[in-house]
Image 1 (cartoon, helix red, strand yellow):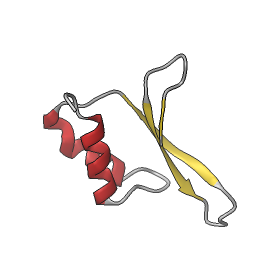
Image 2: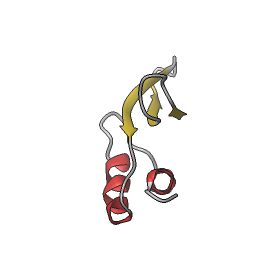
Image 3: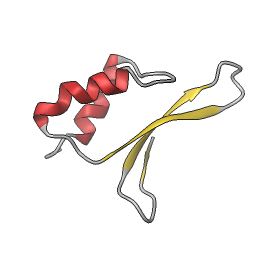
Length: 70
């Protein structure tokens, strides 16, 4: 989820549905942009999030969205 708090920069918030399927919980947050050379590292970070990483396809989409110049 993209969000822009009034007192901070735009960020990407990663949520995971809990095992009891009673709701969603925040896994991690990303703020800022990346250099094109750091795309692979951003994908690796998103796939390996503690508490539940995202699919490689979604991680690639995330990296493209936060890449500088996009």
